[in-house]
Image (cartoon, rainbow, N blue to C red; front, side, top):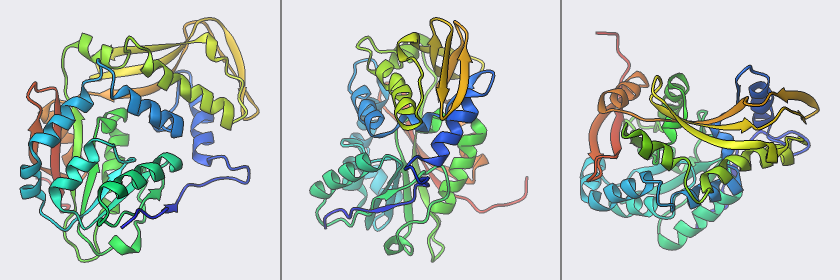
Length: 332
């Protein structure tokens, strides 16, 4: 079955501008520490740049996660069982998603992503690999509870959130997302949904910083693309050549932070509003939190998910965790 063109659930104004994008950018730039949520890095160009990042030598998470998916397919199948609708939060990876779909005998596949063109292209590619699998792409902001196509409403669900995207969020936002995923994945007949989620692990600082500041400059281009997008979509005048890509480890929060640092004083406008940055000021564009087994389990449990299984790559750099939605109960 070929992939459908899908449905779109993105809120646009009359000029075709994503309202949430404009609001987040304007609010973020008005803060003392300017910051923009990492999800806005992923327009179509950003999504392609991230795919390029996964191929650079320094970026280990994709190789480690692919190793797990390749080596443990039989274990995934036994733990998950056949017949679930796989709902992927983010456009399907050309490498990782087929490994999971080939292992678990899904009844349907539903990719959710805010980058519509990239989403539909990924869905078409997977449709060619799995011609008998119903595929229903949904263009939506998966940070919120999302209505799935009626064709999968009654099916038990497996959420798939690969990579280290959960690490892009501060804990309260990550908990909100994991709770909304739980609601999105509920089935009509009450079978508890499952979630297979990637979590990157704490390791040597030099390895971590290099993964987000590769020698070829691909990650820097990914970061700069956010400014290009703001300038293009929000009629902004941010001088890109005055900004420098930074990646640094913050030990207090167990995360790598990406910033864009002003190399000189700059003034610019975004959507008709004026902003200033002094030399050395930064726009904080991404966090990549790293986890231990205990902190990863705690995050899931705080969000209504009970961890069932945990898999690591051979080098112990990355983890995939299978969790099941848990019934709310009073403590203890």
